[in-house]
Length: 375
Image 1 (cartoon, one colour):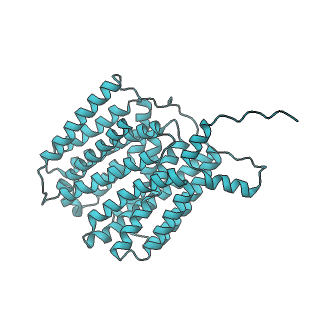
Image 2 (tube, one colour; image 1 turned 135 degrees about the horizontal axis):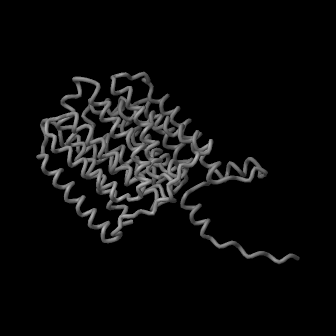
Image 3 (spheres, helix red, strand yellow; image 1 turned 90 degrees about the vertical axis):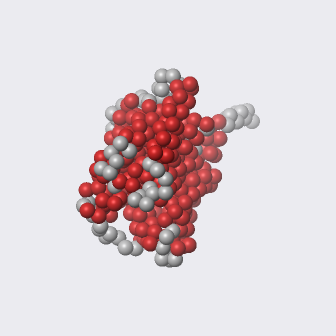
């Protein structure tokens, strides 16, 4: 747990530094063209998939994570140059999260809470960095740069003491064909990720106009952590259904700040569940599985980069999101926990509804009952 906590803290700090650089030297130039938002989205959201494949093959999660931090630090060298800052910040985040996702999904294969803490910390750090930076920044850019560099050095030392070769325990990398059900489930999860990012940004924009920007970030980060905890405690299906239906209802009144914040909180609860399921469906490519979700988010950001908002009803988006997420989870259940097709339909449904990573892990460790002698 200590090692995972170090990864999570490093993500928070690195995302803070990247967002600080972006808000200071890139955001003032966003109105000039569509190039910068597309470049930022491509580097930060589309690159985690190919970089994740390389990270899985490289099998040095700590080294990939540290390289991402160094690339983010390099962005500070291009003071006032918006394009290099956008490219390097996005590339650094992609490397950082590819390495961290591979580590978290590998160390905690049956827990979703670490995934929620990792993603929630990244979101919170990014939001705080955007708030602290900008033309009227409250702190000097030397503070996040020095803090990130110092923590990266400590991170490398910590990993060197525990693992001098920096070799991870990733599964053997093989270019194998993805089963049809797994492929369909990953496509559905990507579609859900696109809808999620689209709704998150458009809702947050409305809240920002009412000066609730930081509250929106806290709501999203808390929702990621809370959803992961609830999924571990009550199961994936119940968490997904309850949180997304609650979000769809609250989005009907999102013009009221409190309802908007609660809707964002509930809407984020399913995200760590979907990322964890991606890792289960593509077990031998943990970093790349995170990139699948991230790539879907890129397609959700793309129309916003050009100022195009084709979907106006957040409630409808949440309903479609629920359909994609639910269908993906059912397909994943059929693959990961096959059910005897001769059993009654009611029994099959009960098994699916009761599924819980903690209970499954505990059940697998229970010894088999002794055989009863025949009478």
